Every structure is written in C-alpha cells, then in structure tokens.
Image 1: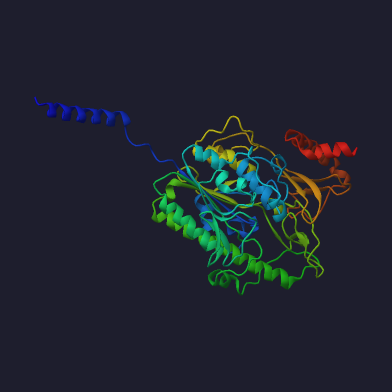
Image 2: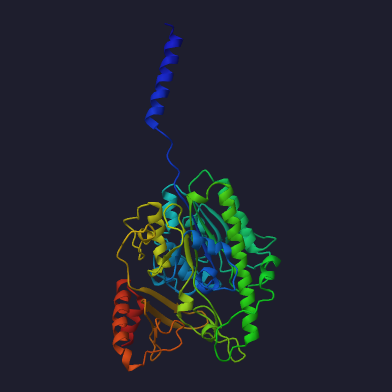
Length: 470
C-alpha cells in the first residue's frame, strides 16, 4: 500500500470522525423585533376599539398574537420611560427622571454604565443587535447606542427629528436625508434584516411618529383622514376645530407607522423570517389631545379657553397606558387577550424569557417576566403597577402612582392637598377625584401604604427629601 494511499485514507477517516462529532448545525435562534412609537396612545389603535383610525397592520399583530388591555409605562414622558424599557430600572435608579433636554445632554446626562440593557445581554449571547430610530438617552460618546448594546445604529441620538428630510446618523456621521423619516427608518430596518437574514438578530425600531409636529406626512397617509370628522373628548372650553385638526394630523402620523409596519411584515414574509421572529409593538407612553383639557403627555399643556399652556404635570391613565401587541409564532394563540397588568419595565426579563436567555445574576432589575402568561401557563402575577415622574423641565413636581385593576392613586410628593384618587371601574376617564371623599379614605390610606413600601424598595430619593422637610 502506497504512502499516498495511507495518507488519503487517514484524512478521509479524520474528516468523517470530525463531522460525526460535530453533528448537525446548531438551530438558528428566534429573532426579535421590538417596535416603539413615540407619543402613541392606546386609544389611537383600531384593535383597542377606535373605529375611526385605520391601523390594519397593528390590528393584525393583535389578531395573530396577543393584545394587552392593561399595559402601562413607568413614566409618562420619553427618556425615563425608554430607560426603564431597556434597563429594567426606574428613572430614579438611573437618574433620568424627565426628558433629557439638549442642555442636560451636553452636561452629561445619559444612561449610566451600571445600567445594563437587554440588547447588550443578547449581544453577549451571539445576537446581532440594532437600534434604528430614536435614542434620547444621552448624546455624549459614552452614551451612544453602540456603547450600550447595539452593533448597528441608524437614526438620531437626541429627542427628535423633522418628520420630512430629517438629519440622521448613518455609519457614525450625521447628514440631512431626503424623504419621510418613518420611511427612511423602515428602509434601513428592511436592509438590516435582509443583510442578516441568516443570523439571529434583535432589532429595536423606534419611530418618531406620531410625536408632534405630526405633519407633514406622506400624501397616502394624510389622504386617509382628509375628510374625517373625528370624535374628540368632551371637555368644557376646548377649541373644537383646533382639537379636530390636531386629531386628524395625529391619525395620519399613526397611519404612516402602520403603513411602514406593513412594509416590514411583508419583507419578513418574503425573506421567510416571519414565523421565526417575535414582534413586540408598543409606545413609550400614552397621549392626550383634549383629554382632561390638555395636549401632549405627562408634561402636557392646557388647551382650553383659547390658550395653549401653561404646563399641567400629570399621571393620568391616558398618558400611562400604552398599546402592547406581541406576535410570537407557534407559542401565542392567535387572538389572545391579556388582562394582567404589565409595565414596560417588564421588557428586560420578558424578552430574555421569550428567547430562553438566562438573566444576569449580578444585575438587579425591577421587572417581572410575563412570558409564561404568553405561553398559556398559570402563574402568580402582581396586583398593581407603579409609576414615577419628577418633572423639572418647564415645571416642577414629584409624582408617584399606584394603579390597581380598580383604583389609581397619584401622590404629589413634597406638596400639600394635590393628591388624586380615581375609581377606574366606575370612572374610567378619571374625571372625578375622590381623594377628599370620606367614603374612600380607607382605600386611599391602604394604597398610600403600598405605594410607600414600593418607594422604599427602590430607595426612592424623594423619601429622603420628605424626611429632610419634616
């Protein structure tokens, strides 16, 4: 037998043994896409009962997945809410308690290094991660998305961009781009998933819409509501024509998100990725257009009596409640409705739970994993959600909130006679403050006790301020 034959046979044997030991290639993990809109209330989605809006793709997610009837946020403005969504910590725990103003951003306010993001956890597990759209968690280099868990970033690090021809960052450089912002973000998202379809990816798509200014929107979105006579809140002193105009423009911006969601779903289908991708759709907080006589969110302004302003800091349900739909192929039964109360602070553990990724043992986060609920498992669940808001831009206040299935208590810390108590069961619009009603003093006292216990559990700095004031 020749030496050449022996060497050839040996190499074939070793190759065969190596292949046998390696086994079949590892199965590709599920992808996840988390879509967060800006300033979108639950009342602006058809699946939540609005018969005037046209949101077929958002409704599709609810129809093919799960719709949450009681989804809330930790803070009714963007930056602290987004921090909670990504880190699983409350705003006071990461020192982001109001939207980060340009002046604060320049002074070094941003998500701290000790606050781990769930995209970073996934990146360590081999996922390719991307943030496309809004960041608003710090503008200095150390706060950049690529320093906080994301391999790819396309969008804007500040709080906003023009709806048309916006300035965006691409490949580390900012430039003015031509086109509608929502379309540009979706173009980049589709490009990202197309390029990386063979990999396991986790993508955050953060639209600026329907944040004000709502217009201009593309003609195909504006035309849908051109002749609509929208239903608006009944509140004494509203300028009806103004509120209806704003509502039409807001709906058009919502429609642009829905249209682009449709483009994304179509791309996933064409790439054969739809059934291997979890899709989460939500918003950073709710919104008012005339509700309670105000416009915008937790830092809204009065829009009654022919004036716009001053600020009306608030924690109304309409600003804390958000749409939340999750499509999880082969797991969530289509048409599932979730009644349990969840918060966006639950995103950190729930994303990891859905993907089967263990939570870091050395990192404290405050959320709870609701993925067992989506699997149809019977699991103990909370009976309340908590929220906080320390407004310091254009107004000042320290608000804390406890929301149960029936009651909503809002406590104005460091202030007298400003607390609010609403019976959601009998007053879902929160129009009647019961805090001074003798019949409900026991209820208010019990809620305050639970709220105080939560504040102590997260070492809320307001407790120290209150102690110093006594």
